[in-house]
Image 1: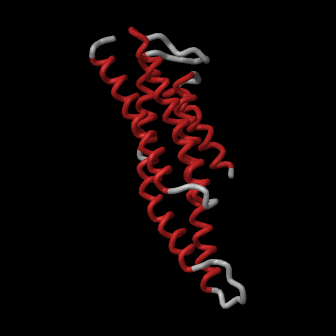
Image 2 (image 1 turned 30 degrees about the horizontal axis):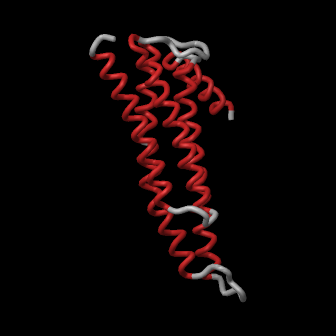
Image 3 (image 1 turned 180 degrees about the vertical axis):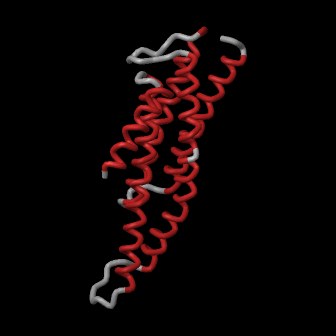
Length: 180
């Protein structure tokens, strides 16, 4: 337990040094929380699929899971794993973007540092939108779990997350390369 506590404390200090305590750190943390939530929903979907499999195979009178429900749950889980992996692959990129922005324009408060032409405001906006889109993708997984959503919504929202992260990276690279 203490090892985990000290490890978390060290990670917090590393994050403070690399990301600061301002807007860049908050944008990174928002994305990480959304990713955690997405994976929590995915784990719940896996548990639901396993419960349906057990229910369908149990020799109990009145089993409620149909073969189709079981297949759908397993298929949804199998289709979501690569989506979850692609979103998880974005976390180091979000961290790099936030760390680079922090090195260019340190932030310790709530105000977005001004960059020439206001591009840092745009970078922050895209990172914030990526975090919000990721939370919406997690919500779509929750709706899928409840039978009120579909895979297309999850995939669409996942694509939006990728677009925002890519746009933030492009803005940072383009404006920093020009010397702004």
